[in-house]
Length: 313
Image (cartoon, rainbow, N blue to C red; front, top):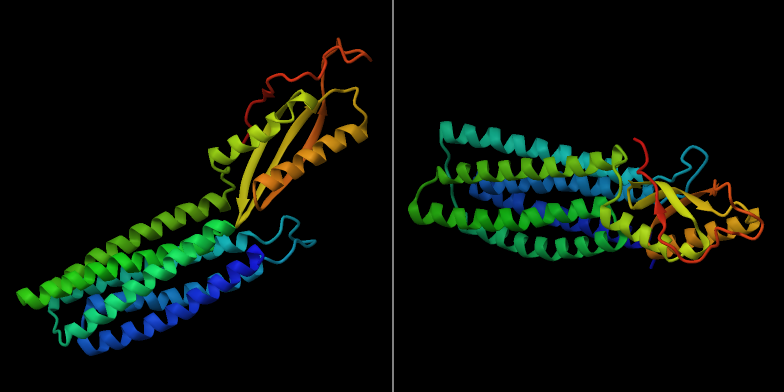
């Protein structure tokens, strides 16, 4: 199955799971009157919109390049990630506001055992779906699916914490603990929203790929050093699941255009094979040595590649 189909199937699974969990939490919140349960339900309700946005964004991101989008549509995934972060932040702010109102005006609770049971079921389901989304997101390098996995992981921790808190409310008969727990959940949600925005903005602003990937590119080039003089102006960025890579390659100036082209083609293919989802462009530069003659006096014996300075911003 292709990466695109894997991502679309995962997005559908996420959406279906979110709808079921949200329905259960809303029913439990209405039955118990617990703000803690309601805050979890509101968070899941927003997840429905976010999972829907993910599904649509991933389908759009998988469209092939066209005349208006020659680099493809990968950044639709990035936009979906930022949209999710903003929605998460809004839900966190609402939970904080409602918690403060409940602390000021008081709250009444009932049938908390039912609410705790729903939260426990939600924690188990969220744990399973988060593992699935995380594995699929990592395999396909989808930022949108990884963000979705983070939401479900958050549900695991927050629901487990809320169950413990509601147990204390029952044991100690202290209803004010319910909005206090909601305050903590709201703060945690805002923190995670900030992390998602930071990740998404890195892609929007064309932040370079991680050092581990850049080092892997350098190692692949080094394996071909017998045919090269050096490389410089390595530039990398991400567009959704796609990794865009370009650099200048210096070769002997006495090589024919066909020979230089074959070297570049081979190197591009090697990078694409090793680094999944990469779009590679290589610009060929001739060596500028003045003492080179028709006998190739500079010789192409293996030597350490000369890495040029990083690309200018």
